[in-house]
Length: 325
Image (tube, rainbow, N blue to C red; front, side, top):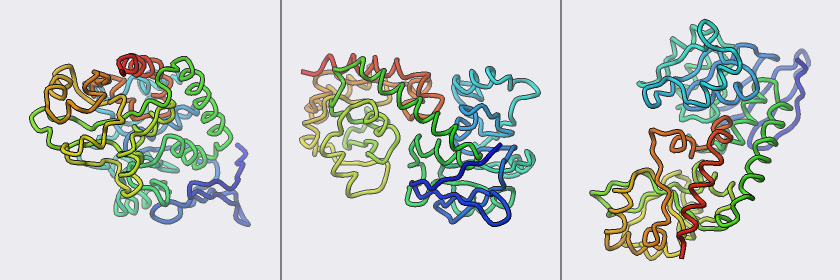
């Protein structure tokens, strides 16, 4: 495979040395040099296997999903079947219940380890780097803050498949643009993505900031950001923000809320004297997600999940938008 190497933003660089076409990537913990044409790709932490799979490459090992009694997410299972990677040809699944399984990763003898979307500590990175060249989250980015676009750009470059990665990006962008255009009523609706709501303690408003992939995906779909969330995010680099519920007046421009929960969650919010004053709560313009269902998982977008749930997510948001008064 010919390695095409160009300069990229996102704190990511690749170049050729005098003697080879090794790939050089800058990241949060320094620089990683990857031998040209890596063949054995291992991934650790959530969703990093999706970049090679989307590009038609089956990892030698990847993290278990632990989703609804299954070790694989449905879109991952579907792609592995499409690529014929089942049975003896299936990747090794790393159990990361207690953190990265370094021994299991080493046993797969990888040429490169992808972890662009991750919370790897520097110690984790150093230990993995003793096994194979490792690519953690990018320089200037917070842990678990890597966007799905960055994941594709970084992962595809690390594999020597930059052109294929760009094509994948363009395809996903086109799908998002075309499908979103079919739901004009959601456009510019200011939407807040609450974290898990505890009906027994509504003293605080906890939300995903603009640094988080969930909020960014709503922006991808053409939706707006409430002023309070935008302002908080400009002053903080965390992906979760918390404000006192007594500041609910700050959320008087929230048209739609997305959160994890069920009808009891919505009822608790509407019955609360403070939360109930937020326009989206008052109108019932709330999208309720289950963490045990594909849409709830894929609200945090990844390369394979986006096309899998895009229509369902847009329909749910459109139903909420119809309730906005």
